[in-house]
Length: 507
Image (cartoon, rainbow, N blue to C red; front, top):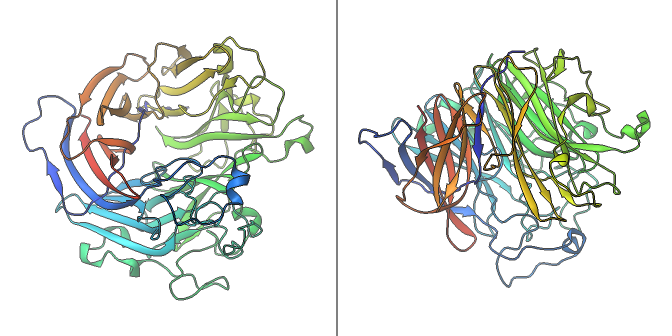
């Protein structure tokens, strides 16, 4: 197993949108890590500025009310959110929904870092809200973006949360022709001249499910309808391997019976069939409970890896949601075979029992044994450095004793076992660049960066941002070729907010 030092952690996310405003620090940096530029992306990003709804079933029975702000079911910040930013050559691609409440159009922006030109594409598709109830915002429904280096095509999967053609919209439209949403461009679209970056680059749906001349939503990634394969999907993400292949990962199923699936782009809008990480309905295989995985698939140091936490459908144990840390990897760059656990022992896909991939039971780091009192949600991510050090972060809450434990599990290259440390500040994500790992977040409304050498837990603050245009409340991170691209949401009010991009040099 050739594993890479791939850690960088994100505690807080940021979002901002604008058009022409650019701030660039041209002075000689006084520190290794420094801000290269700040660019306003838009001042019209959708934000759910109303009240947070309670019980989902009650929300589904609610009716449209013109009064007040944009109410929402889960979180308030939808732009930026999820797999919303990628880079290719000297371009940065960012996704968002256009505000306010009565707009909701899907947007794709491309920033040319050489000349500062910022171009926006507005798609006909509009955020559909909570299972078709557009007046209730739904933060699961992110817009993931991927770029294929092989043919320079652009790919988007968006606005999905376990939909099927049978989803009950309460009379607000139908998902029969729209339970999966995929859009793709013609080859070469990612690097066209700025003036040519437009909606005309994207391929219209010409299938029997087409809803007219302005329909760019495709119901499949294989060219053929397959409801079983493309229904009940949530959390889309694109990534690349070291050979230039574009991959797509998403969860299929429910929170207590869900599986990870992935596929690979072939060309001309066609993808390979999905391969499953784990199996649904494992009770039919003799296990007492079904389970779902919550995790991330990534490619680092020539290794395709997958780390996750398990959500077991056992309502009598001490775990309220997830448990444990699990990790597996494949030496096959396409992930078709050769899957192993961290000890190098063979794992067969799809997983039926998660235990062969177990690294550590994080629930053992708190005292409570009381039913539903170990709360493990969020604060989980993983990475591998170029040197082969594996890093995983997790967070455990003891609801009975009101304690929170942030854990850093790391396996230096050459070591047989993971080291787990409680001496860790905690974060939502972890990233890497070269042989270093990073924690990236917000403090007093501005970005900060903490760095550690791969295979260690010795984080030090290497960057603290100062206010230029705004303070930020959330952000999404992308790291490429030694640079941090921080897609940020500015503090503000109303259902239209401002977003920015900061480019921070890490080396």
